[in-house]
Length: 249
Length: 308
Image (cartoon, rainbow over the protein chains, first blue to last red):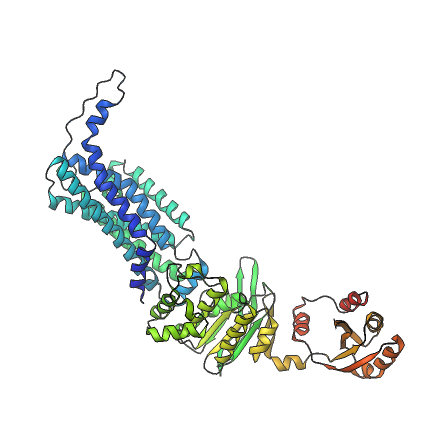
């Protein structure tokens, strides 16, 4: 059994695939429903004399709600699952098993990173399909090609998240430290997003990009963030391979 | 020809000197025992040879490519969601030396895990994981096997099986076994290295080491042996005297000629009823304690037991 098959078995038997699918599909199915009933929920809540007027929700609102939830819950779930998978040296005796057999660190890192990232993208695809179906049923047609484009941008975001985790996994030795460090960096990037000069260049720009290609108002300079995220992901993975190759057990 | 040769190999963890310049010389095909008390640097030495740690200074020369070096840690760990057979399959596959099911089953049979082949290793005992660690190390056809305390977690029967397995590799695989159990080492190793505090205190054949030991006598008298032990502990030609079992004494002798002349007098003086007297084989344990400086002071045992 080679490393690729081992990693496929890992995501299945450790139920990480199920956790990812469950998180993304629940968001994909649930969020459009929440959006659809938002006006009813608001009108039936305590108003205290305040009259709230909400515009009629559209398909774009449904997809935007899904994207917002995926940017938060989805990112957190992916970061946790990635850290549990990618911290190679958390258990020294297990690390010795791999390191004495996979002498080139690229063989240690790449299969695990790529299979885990692919699992996250598959879960995102399932969540996006669920959101597309639910939104179409509740609100009407959603342009599938534009949604597919948004999905591609969102997939790149999750590649960036797993790359960030693998980068930290080559520095720290516990899953908690890796996920904590990665989330801290993502929060800092989110804060930097408020600086208009650099906001369009930050990978966080892609975090809720499912509706970006549907809405002409938000498409903007998305390609800056695409280039930065793709380059950063590649650099982080290369750095992790280099660092893990140099690190002692 | 040497399979492993190190020169002035040193390793420091911060201010702690784990290895202080050791020169290992391990012949190809030998079963070599690396013995020493806890913290003597055995595991660090093995991990450096396995390529898991880098030495602070010194050289390591292996006569084989690094993918022909197998390492079995003292408490091996595996993915708990794999079965034992899958662990062996993975161990071979990661080395790009895939094995068929028959070879995997045969390897599990050799280490006594044939019945557990389809069980997930998450439920394995430490002893079973030790056996699986050896199987995972051997499935790749190593030229050098580094086994850290391979029998430490095993029951006496399992211990014997694993030691016989390792001894059986002699000639085809160079085996380096670290242990603080001298009985295990004496049983399977032709050559040993004795380590303490990061230093290699002795390296050579077990027989040569035993030959360096001071002579010893075995005296059996009808109990009680207290008066005789007390008399012996006061004799200048006695280095140490211990009661091995009721009435059976082991006397480490500082001066053989004096011992042969004076022992009958001491026996007579104590009124001891002599059953048997002869030479005692030197104990590797005593030599080890002497070398590593981890044993009780000479004579203390004689005094302690004289009271009983």
